[in-house]
Image 1 (tube, helix red, strand yellow):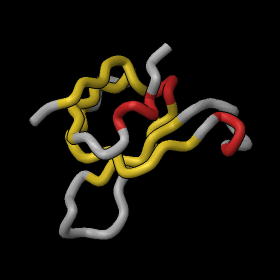
Image 2: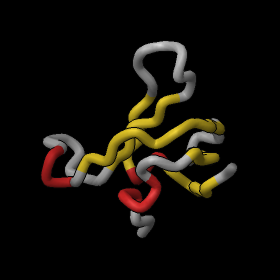
Image 3: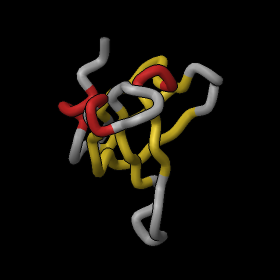
Image 4: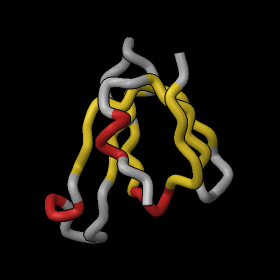
Length: 69
């Protein structure tokens, strides 16, 4: 299991289970106990700092995640 909380504040490259690729800064971590359905950890990613919003991925969505410069 990936420890998603260790990626908060870092720029990451994420490969999802559906084949999509994302790069951005992890700006939040949500523990499984905070999520009603599904009950699993997740992270919020800011893709473009010039725009509001971003994406949220549950742990089961993430195939691979790595910190990049």
